[in-house]
Length: 628
Image (cartoon, rainbow, N blue to C red; front, side, top):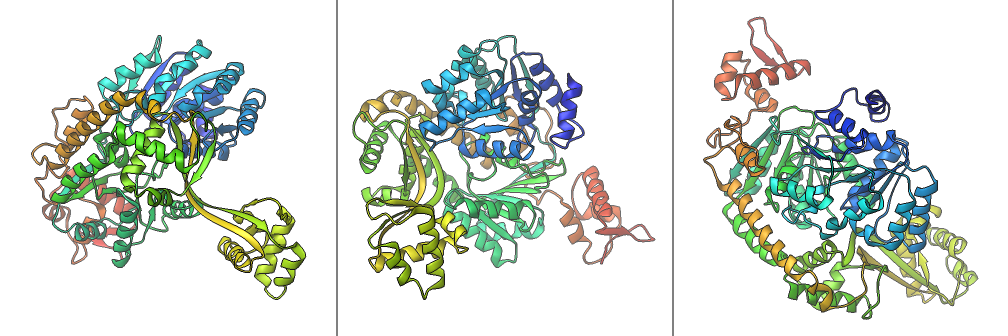
C-alpha cells in the first residue's frame, strides 16, 4: 500500500522522500480511518490527502475556504495530469450541474468546494451519487469559533458525514491551539481518529523584532544586508506600491502584489518573483496561499497582522528548504495605536452590517425575497463613492457577510464592456477604412458578435484583442472612439469584485440570525490582537518560546538566535554578513567568531555553504577570503 504511495510521491510530485509525519498520516488514511493533521506552514499538508485521493478508487472531496486557494490547488493538480475541478463563485446553475455530472461520470480524482456550496440541495444530491473515497477539510481551523479565521459554514461540514458515513475524513491545518483542536474533533464527529501533530518550532527561522524611529531606512538597511529572495507583508494596496518604490530607489529589485491587480499582472508579478528575476515581493496577505518557493530567505512585516496565527503562517513561507532564514518585524510606536484604531474600524457591528447589506442590495437592485444564486460584478470604489462609505469599514462588512454565508465574495479586476450598434456594420467599416488598428478591432468584433442594433452585446475585450492582434487598451480606446462618433453605444465598467447572493434578500432578519455570534467573534479577535502586541513588545522573553507557548507547546529552551535572545544586538548572522565581514581583508575562523556573535555551528554551516557555492575560499594560512 505504501509502496504505491511512494511511487506517486516520486512520479507525480518529483520527491524522493516524505517529509516528517507525511508517511504515517497517509498510511492511517489509506486504512480508512479519520485523521487530524497539524503540520506547520510548508510541512506538506496537501500531499497527505492528495496521494490517498489519487491512490484510492473514486473521487476525493476537498473543502477549502478561499477561491484563490482552490484555484491554485486545482491548477497544480492539472499540471501533474491529475483530473481535478473546483466550484467557485460566479458559476451558473447550468455550469454547476455540468461540473457535478462530470464528477459522477468523468473519472475525476478531486472536487474542491467551499463550505457554503454544501448548503445547496443540488450539490448534496449529486455528492450522494459520487463514489467518494476521502473527505479532506483544508484550513480546518476555520471550523472553530476559537480559531483566527472562523467561518460559520464550516460548522455544517458534518453534512458530508451524513451523505457518506463510511468515508474517512482528514482535517488539516497549520495553526490550532488546544481549544481549536477540541472544537475540530467535536464538530466533525470523528470516530476512531488519530491526531498527528508536528512541533510548531521552526528552528531554522530566526525571529527578529526591530523598533525604530525610521521604518523606511530600517526597511532598506535590512535588504542591503540580506539579499536573498524575500516577501514583505503590508496591510494595504497603497503601502504595497509605496514600499516597492522605496526599494527601487535603493536599487533593490522588487514588485508588488495585491487583490486590486488584474489576473495577468498578478501572474506576471508572481512568476517574476518565483523565477528570482526580482528579489522582494511586497504584498498584502492576498499573496502566499499555495505558494511553495523553497529558497525564501526572509519574510518582513512592516505592519501588524491580525493575530499570532497569521504571523506564524506568513513567516512560515521562509526557509522551506530548511536553510537558515529570517522573520523580521519592523515597527514604531505609532503602529500599535494604529493597529487598535484599525481594528475598531474594521470590526463591523450588527447595526453597521445591516446598513451595508441594505445599501449593497439597493445598489445591485435586488428586491426583498430575491437575489439568491445571482452573481453581480461590483466596482467597490464606485459603491463606496455612491454612499460616501469608509472603504476599510465597508470592505470588512462585505467580508463578514461572506464569512456568515450571506454572500460569496470573489476578487478579480476586469473590464466589462457592453456595446449596442447604432449604425450598420458596413457604415462602421467605412469609418475605419483608413485606421488599420480600429479596422482590425471592428472586423474581429463583427466576426465574433455580429452588429445587432436591438440588443446589448457583452464584449470580451481580451478575446477581441487576441483576435485582432492588438491590445486590450486599444480595444477599449476603439470602443470609446466609436461611442464618441455615435456609431455605437458603449459602456465600459471597471469591476474588482464579484458578489453572489447565497440567500434571498431579507434585510435585518438576515443579520439578526448571527448578530450574537458576530459580537463574540469581535471580542475574540481583540484578544488575539492583544496577544500579538504582547509578542511584539515583550523584549525580555525568547520570541520562539512565546510563539510555542501560544500554541500550547511548552519548552524550557530559549532559541538562542532571536533578537530577544541577543538582547537587541543585530542579531542573526547570515551568509551575506560573513561576506561583508570579509570585504576588507581575509579572516580566520576565530576572527569571524569574534566579529559576529553567533553560535559556532551556524557560522560553520554558513561557511560551508559559501565554500560550496564558490563565493569564498581558504588561503594557504587558513583564512577565508572573497572570491573575485
